[in-house]
Length: 467
Picture: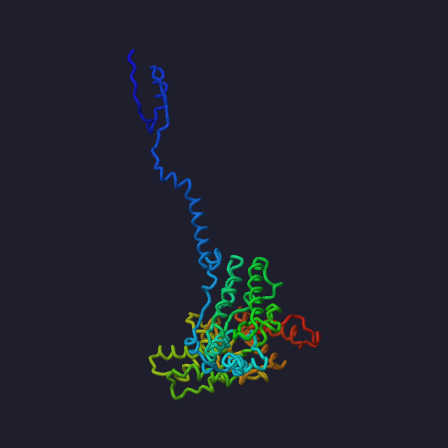
């Protein structure tokens, strides 16, 4: 019997009866796996690649540490990348001439400027400049601008950094950035550090949320340590800004750290006029523009708001193709800022009529109730989120409110709903904002200002953040 040997690959589709047929005919079957040729270099990478990458990473970190590149692993996140430094030449671009409406705050800081210019004037008598100055005020009042003006007047380097830029998710990065910041400042003394939004990490250590405790506390502790590290004779002054002074840690506020607190309040009428003059220095104004009248119609606006008002008026005049800005441009821009931009809504005659009665109710009570603010404008043109607006503008700045004035405001707020009920005999959702404001006023009169005869002079609610 002749024996034939041959080799073949297993076919993709196998006949189920093929194996039995081969065995019946005396065929011996031996199966072996197909040997694939592999690239030895690829096999090496698959086996040792991850290990090599880890070794390369740690070697790179070691080289950074040897070269002083920011503290190894912390250097990846940049201990000094967020610090903004303004040289002496750049610092002088902003001076006290660019700051208006906050004369009391400027006067407080003149002594700081004088110390940086003439330190021997104070040092020979044993006096030292304050280590830290807190700028406390509402957003937009000019705290950052005031800090830059101090540096500009003194002609010293100015280092600026927001407190929120200190903190990263990696514990220890914030403290490293604080050390780097104070190191740079000492090398360029006399100089100024400005830390904006100090409340971001300067909160009382008992009030920090559990997840952020370690990093925030390390960063705050490092700031406290660095401020204790210089005597005040080195010419290094720390300026910090916040609009939430009530949440700051008491360790920051003790003498020897932030020795002086400067209140940056909202400008009064004269201050607003001065701010308008600053922001309109290079703006072409029409002959009918009366800055004093504009200042009197903008109570409660901050310096940033007034700057935005001038810009909006310029944009409006440019949109109309005019060569200068008129008084009407300012008034129209003021209404846009306070009341919101006009909206084009398709409303039925019935809706427009109901809105007119609603706003008429506000206007009538604003005119007849003693002590109420004068009605300045009434419109049923939708503005912002409102379908109609009744704008009552105070005659002058108010710093203290009588009970009669607060009651007059509440009565005016409820006039719209009352008019609707008198005319239509039913209610709509249009009084939602009126009810919300009236409720807030009434609640504060009872719980904070002791204006309830039934409860007396008892504080039932904590004072909110003043800013």
